[in-house]
Image (cartoon, rainbow, N blue to C red; front, side, top):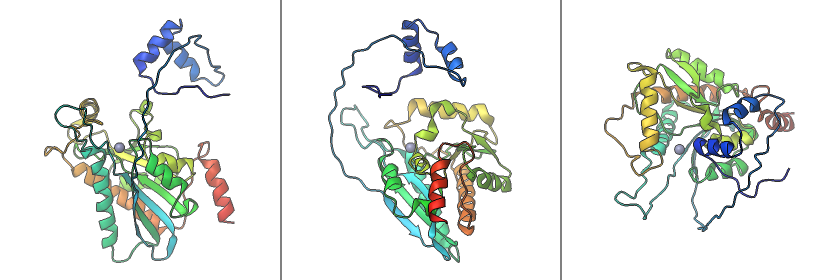
Length: 314
Ligand SMILES: [Zn+2]
């Protein structure tokens, strides 16, 4: 099948309107589309589009640090966070600087904190730990895609990738969210670490946003490397779930990808510290083992991993 001439994203409201113009009911088709025997339904509409593009080439870098393993230095655990945001927009009135304080200065700070914690261990773990600050995430996962397809350390020897993108700024949570929960055996490591601190693990509360495909772990998944994106939980110890989700929605509406994503002294980072302790344990345990956690059966990334592992670990 040939690809569309133009591809893009639609807001839900716009999609509903298009279905209506075509005389179709969006909700009905959506239910049908979830069924195995669904066949695509032509909309019978045409559209005229004009796209105006200008291209500017810029150079940017991924930043990589490594703590060599004490026994199996050629096997790796990667912690990752994107360091870029949107720079400046001179067309804006007032504040033109995109600080990206939450997205993703928090993740970048976490990377540095984790590196320091691993560095402070009396003895480095058996496997090497890689700290990867990738660029160009906001422009389409460019830095992570580049690394995953031009890896410094063999992807087949990379046991796991843990991505951090916007930490918890709302305080301690009873749970931790895992974007990509159910996809790989990495879940069990996160569950075990969460249990130790009396926390639970939950899947993404808003999977319709497609978060698994929208941050830097995804290019690794495509290369078969088990990759997760643990994110802040949603069940606040004091205020509960609704409160947390409302806070998150407010951030998304008012500050996400805007110059107003700025540090606020009212942030409560204690929950982020809980999350980082948990992620440290996950990485440490993985770095002390010789096993390679795999994707779960039925996952689209498993075939590539199985083939790569079979070729190398004969
Ligand atoms: Zn981000």
